[in-house]
Image 1 (cartoon, rainbow, N blue to C red):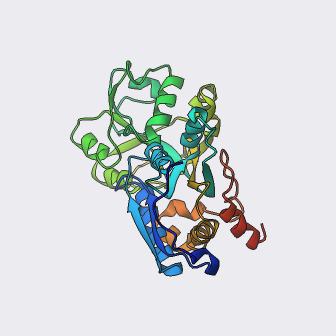
Image 2 (cartoon, rainbow, N blue to C red; image 1 turned 90 degrees about the horizontal axis):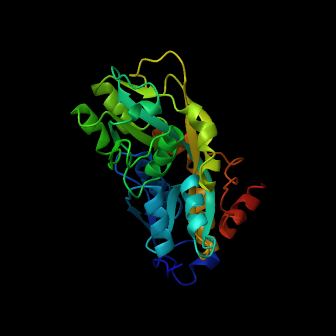
Image 3 (tube, helix red, strand yellow; image 1 turned 45 degrees about the horizontal axis):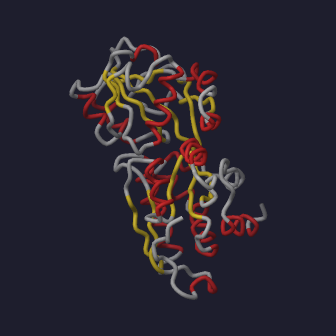
Length: 310
């Protein structure tokens, strides 16, 4: 792993008072990662005021992992499948990555106009489909979902490589027939779109068996349901079957244990406050936080969980 950003002042670890500067990789401006990162930064400001937290927007999980490995970020949010895909290709088996905490699950959402004839993923053939940006975890799972439906992302659909900050507007102006999004529930950009344009969520759960037949990273997808009230403006009578994947807060193996312990503590301590603004963050739970496959816990995170009697 490249030399990390300078963030830990000399001698700061001994007093367990982090100081200096850390860079946290988040996501696109209107996504859940960005909002979560902002609120976590505020929590750290309360608990570790000597620590300067710099939030760095990104295209998503894949780019976040690349930045962490390159040493241009210190902590990032990334999905388990994106991490597993990186580990499969890493020359040293990804030994440089460690987890702090399992956060919340991302739900795969296939959004179409309410009057669209699209009823399943296979109906996307020949259409203009938002697939997420090239550095996003959205695009990783979208490619696998399309393959599970018998479609090639490059050949069978017109793949529009945009993110959640632009796809809703493109659908409003009839430049997209559908778009995929992977995020916590609810995602503000989808909520906003639903209040301006009648839309519908297409079920994806039936693809899970074929999805698991893909690469090693597909083992991290699980069956999930989006409740009818996830987006109040979308008139549905029953839950929508879909696919979910866990988000992890990730750092490097060489990150100072004292700093990592303090960041992990802030995630757990800030759950209720952050969850009041980001509904998905209510899923952060001390009992499940340690389940961070495919990564081992960082020693600083282990130190915190031991102190919490886990």
